[in-house]
Image 1 (spheres, rainbow over the protein chains, first blue to last red):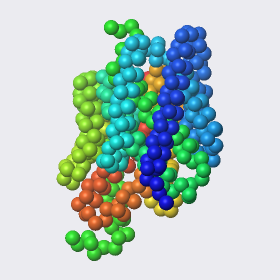
Image 2: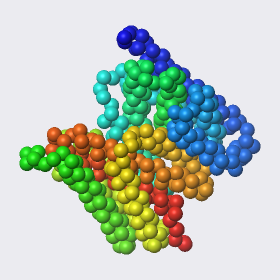
Image 3: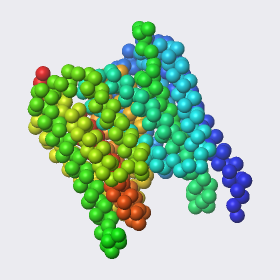
Image 4: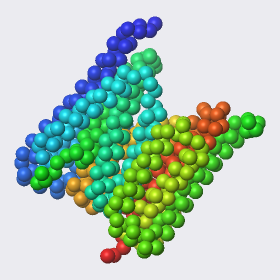
Length: 232
Length: 230
């Protein structure tokens, strides 16, 4: 009953779908952020609207992951792409805080690191479950450190925490890639038991997971090595 | 060993007891250290007037969490415990700052609230027959979104956004507590054969729940704590 070849072929199609949506959302975020940063007036409006924008962002992530089973493919996709636009809007400020060249080189570095870890997570035969649990544990520790440092506002500690954040999200990228691949395999193996269209919808959730990994990696890397405007 | 005579369920229980025991002990260490540093001006000033000391403490904290979770299989039980308690002590030193920012009453009532929420979610996670994997995955995804919002708000510095982020953080860490307890219980069921490993896993589980609790407490404090007037 199983045709191994066609399963592995369809698994790569599934992964292509995940990366295509993720890349699409990243492109939207980048374009939105850049075009808004060109208009200084828009930035003022966004500052005043930052609260509803952030609320909508949180609402979209909560809604997407919570009601995922009940959403249609189109709705899920629209929510995801809307989310990427909103993230782009809030990200427009980084063009004011960091120099253009450092944003660009940080983006390239992030893409390289992300790509490397994604390939590793996809190809490796090592089970990364332990790495994932460790990554999450470190993330919990990082958030504690982060919250405490908001009381101190110490830039040196902030710098270190950003470095730790880069390490953590690198690990999580590899782990998430492997998890998504395994999820794709599971769906393909039990296709009869799973409702039609689930596979396509899963690509959206997978894309959101990797998109969040990428954005977090980028932000922590930017804070770790980015040059602020006005500094040499 | 002699443990093999016990029925399975009681061995899982003894795993859970030692895990929550270590966690509670670590919390006590943190609470006492925090209080001691806060009321001893000599120590407090030494730590906080000296950026280098503060940085060393943070480096040690990051190193201990990474070391504990990465090298657990190679550590002895005693080393793992020592690292865990040193971490709890160091975290207590940095936590002492909250006694200078928030009123003692509000720290105390936040602690009681956090303990109540944590206890309820831990019991739920332990007893429920519902599979919490989905809840866990969703919470982690929301947590990722929350970290982005947190970092972005470092630039925006909006107090209202901070309040909302703290509120959402409280919900996420309450859900993660239930999920983690269920996950650790399932882990214990799978590892019954290996006593030695199980004791070390109890330390790692205690660290995980300890971090859940501290996060819950800190987000709750930012959400409902009353700041001291300058």
